[in-house]
Length: 211
Length: 263
Image 1: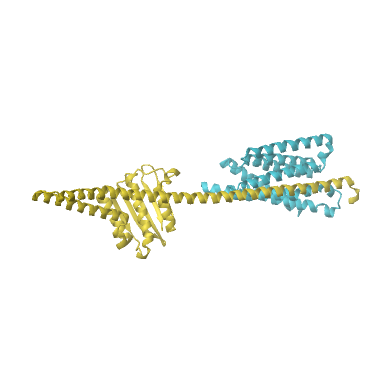
Image 2: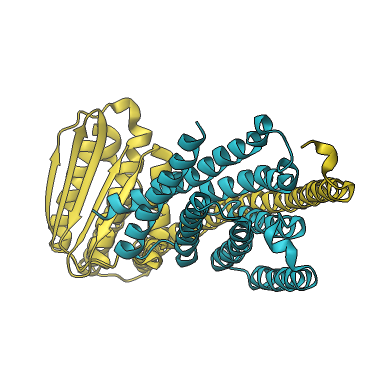
């Protein structure tokens, strides 16, 4: 069951990676940062899998992923925004967040190998805010990356809490230990699936029109 | 291992961060909804504004058309009738002059008769232009046939008219719109398009009455929106909306114009 959840989300991610790279090189329509984000997620997932098999602590990677996700999705939404003030908000809030996180890690380097609560909260919040800003911009306009943004908001709301309680689950009995992670794996799968839905809606149709 | 082995500090931190996360999310969501509402209301207002502006433009168009029409009728009356009646009146005054010879009287009378005949003919033409009697008596088909004939004789344009629809005389009000649209299109073809040939056909396609109009004039760039905003075009548009039909105008420079409308 666990393997099925995890590997199906890998497969979904891999499919969306192929689909988006295809439309990126064919029509140069998919957003650059979006592609980079997918590639980044894919690399992290693969390396996590490898580390899992080598019995290493992969929380360092997890923290990298959370920060990288914020940067890439931030840049992605920044490239979608048209209002200069919004772009500035994205850039400055990201710089500020990174600065604070680095100061925190400098003071307490052990946090890298744990679920860094502060970092998770800040990064998820920022991505959520960027996605909501994008929703605001889409009101009454054409929908771009609409389904993906829905996925982002849903995933961020649910999985942030699961990550925050991550340090607790270490100490639970095996029976319950994996419950939250199964849920998280399922949410990741749904999130990656929203990318495919997005591709289906935004990119496959225009391709047909062009044909 | 049990839950108690976790330092209390950590549990408190987790609880704090989780609640902080939700609090900030709640605030952000409230802000989001507040601004969204404002934006939606603003969009609605813009929409209403757009409709109002469109209606105002329509109204302007109606008033301007009315004024132009009045001007045209006034000009027709002045040029063709008043001037002739003036001369008639002058001539009649001449008749009252003393010591007129027989031949002079005859000449003046002939003048008067000629001028009144012409004035009569002109007044008939003006009335005819306003609403052709053939159209009123025999319907749209005959009206357009006569329109084509008129264009052929007086304006040296070759017309091809084909009708496959049996028009119902009860719909004469609607038919008048169609007649006016075609009149406008033909006038435009001649005046702006310098066309020498015009094709008009009425076809019933799957229960929808359709009119196809084509000419071989100089055409215009139909992708340029400026070309669709003239008074004549507005007039046609509002007539089409009266008919609850659709209109499609395609044209290229030096390639004539093709108009399809349904009614």
